[in-house]
Length: 169
Image (cartoon, rainbow, N blue to C red; front, side, top):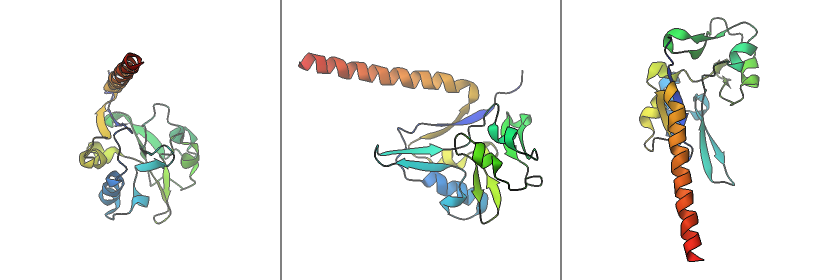
């Protein structure tokens, strides 16, 4: 049985919007504190007051990989199926940017190349520096269990709040 690998998980309810993840990502990869060079992007939903970190989901059937006309994107099975870009093959056409359903592929106009999360070769700096643990690095097989536990916790809280409201009526 092949290794499932590890994936980034995002809990947007914990994200404070500090954007430290963007800065450490840019420093790790390009040596400069510039969020435009980050592989993780924090999206701000102004009306809802939410910050949502977005990163490559390492898709099983990655649209970026399927859409690449020169096959510069592949899965590295030795690293748990991580989706990687071969920059010696990439022609910078940005098809991958257009087809990514998560907006996780970006184009760096300075270096004129596409960029995406490479999981920092197994030690994601966004996870390391996120003080509120809105970003985590977990075994792919554990994601479903973690999501079920979080959903059960939210339902439990909602049920208690509903019961308290009912008692006050």
